[in-house]
Every structure is written in C-alpha cells, then in structure tokens.
Image (cartoon, rainbow, N blue to C red; front, side, top):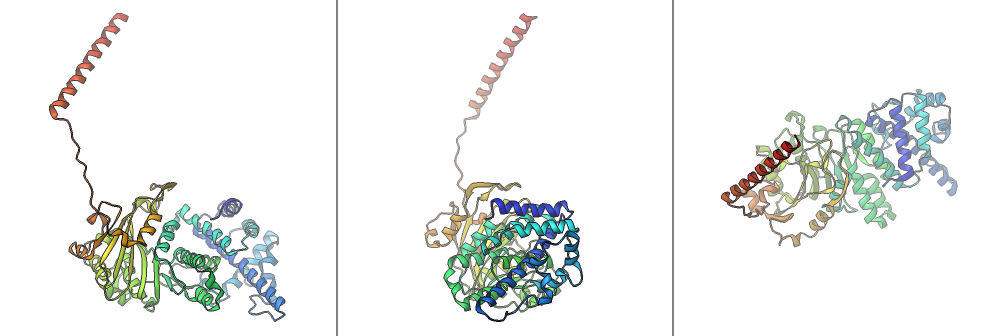
Length: 489
C-alpha cells in the first residue's frame, strides 16, 4: 500500500494535470501511463546495457539505436519546457517512437489511436519532473504507485468508469486460490485488477517457482488472458500488468462477446471477472456458441455463457453478477441458472449488500463460484449473507471495523463444517433438489429463515387507562399553570 511521501508525490502529479486543464481522470491516467512507459523503456535499455557490459557481450535486443539515444528518458528529461514539448510531439519524436514499437511490445501494440494530450510545455515539464522524482526501483513499489493512480478513477467516477473494490477482488482471489499452472482470464479486463491480484497471489504463495525459466515464461506470457474493447482501458490495463511485473500479458483488444472472440474456447482454467451490467446486444453481434448456452440480449447473462465456453473442463470461476441474475424469471435467466446447476457444478453464492459499489452504483450484487464440468456435479450450494465489507455502505465508504470478508474465505475453505449450520445462520448449505423445486432461484432470501420474536403487548384497556392518566395529569398541570399566570397579572 502506498503511503507517506510517495502518495503525496502522486497527488502533486495529479494536481498538475487538473490545474493545467486536464480534468478527465481517464485522460490523466492515460497520459501518465505514456510517460511511465517511456521511462520504463529507458530503464530496460539501461539494464540490458549493464548486462552486456558485465558479460562482455554485444547488446541484445536494444530498444534504442545510437541514432535514437536522444529519445531516452534520461537524455531528454532535463530539457527546457518548450524544447521538451517539441521533442515529445514532433513526428520523429518520443511519442511516435513509443507508438511505433509495434506488435512485439505488450504495450505499444495497443497504441493505435493514442493521442498525446498534455496541453502545455509547463504542464509537461512539471509532470516529467515529478515522475522522475518518484522512486520506483522495485516491482512492489511500481505496482503500488499504479494502483494508487487507478484509485483516482474511483474517486472521480467520470464517464461511469470505476473499478471493482480491491478488497472484494482480493477476497475472490483468496477463495479460488490461483495455482502456478493456471491460465487465468478476465473477459472484461478493464484496468486488469483481477489479473493483477491473481498475479500477486502467485508471487506471494509460489515465490520459489520463479527460479524456473519455464515457469517465468508461462507467468509472463501465457498465464494471464484479458479482453477489453475500450482502447484507453486496455492501455491502462497493460501498464498495470507490467508495473506489477508481468512482462508480456496476453491482452486482446476485442469485444469479448463478439464473433471476433470466437477463439476463446477451452482456454482458461480460472476466470475472475466483474462483467458489465445492464447492457444489451443484438443476437446478430453475439458469437453463436454463447447463445447456445444462454439465448439472451443481456450482457450479464451472455458473459456467463462466454465463461462456460472459455473455461477448460475442470476450470473454475468467481464472477460478480447483479442480483437479478439470481432470481430473474425470464426464460434466459432460468436457462443460465439451470445450465450452471445441472450441467456444471455451482459451488457458492455470496450475497453482497447494495452499498459495495457506492457512490457510483447502488445495485445489489452477488458472487457466483462455479466449476465447468459438462457433466453436472452440483449436490448442494453454499450461501453466505455478507453484511459488511469493512467500509460504510453509504456514499462516503469510510473504513469501519466490521467486515465479513475473512470469515467468508475461511468458511468457504471448510464447507464440511457448514453442514451443521441452520438456515438462520449467516451461511448455510442448500440441497440442489430444493433449488430445482424453486425454479433454480438462487436468491438467499428464498432459503434463509428469519426468527420472529414473540412480543407481548399490554391489553387495550390497560393502554387506554394509561392514556387517561396522562391526560388527567396534563390537564392538572395546565390548570396550575393558568393559576400561576393569573397571580402574576
């Protein structure tokens, strides 16, 4: 977590944009991302040069030729404002060099349509100076810096862009426990928060595996798959992955539900996602195999069909859905729930309070955890009624002591102990036969039992007599007050 001086430095960079007239948070982060990448290219070149010198070998895979040396961050960062600005934006300048690195670079391949939008030499110089002073020498610090930048999207909430709360993502990752051999996908990747959290889990729990060259290749090039059709978000997501140490993530700029993504079949062993809600697509624009899973125009249902298609048999998923998916009565709603329960293994439904996504969305949501089996396997479903996530459930979302997240993770990994829990508890198991009998309804309120306390009230005549006594006392007090007023007069 970023604290102290570095946090203040990032705030200064952010304020430099705002005072310079760039107020859209996505634009700010995108422009900072460009500069961070330019800085990183110079760092990579320097590392390769040191390696070549140490081994007394020719420089391998240089990023810059001798003629391009002036395009390196270390060479241009101290230029005068006007000179620096022109050096960045001219046709043979730094920005176009970055854009034209091409498909071999995990970031530059998403640069089509990228625009340099820092408005003035003064703002550019100020931001370059501030970024140059932020110490990002290690992977953890780089990741924390970028995570703090991304938190600004949530703070601003512009254009409907806001991230899944990081503590919710972490809980979901802790529940599914990614493995070193996994291929992890987020089909609505956005800023790649789920993929980054999964990477951090692997880094923490399987640190010794990084000594193996084959695993490092898998981790850097094959382990993480993300699709995102928003050009700005995929660039931000790519930088987020690289800042967290994933060198060449497999990110694809495509609409995940479209026919262009037909190749996403039997690819992933783990899906983590929070797909868009309330969208609607025509059948003609949706890949046919998805419609075979769920015949709908609603994006939240179509994404579930996509995930079932994209998972390998035995692959598991944790996905956030709006509550309507759990109890909707349309043919498509029932179809996808029936598919999850009868054709695969639905393991858990975590009901979340509506304030989790405030102040930008008040919709109630839930987390579904399931495994693709193609042969059923749902014997019982675990339900948990989350009441608190560690933050107030109003628009302020201030940190509080109450949180169910650790309890959810602990109980999920000990489902055998849940058998004895009653329907009045915060979590419990429901047999699949009962769910089928309720038309595959997955709303926790359908199964949770509420204890109604019997409360004894006084008889009406007793209440009436008390009212009369009060009325008599009131009348007596009023008479005494009138007498006192008459004496004064």
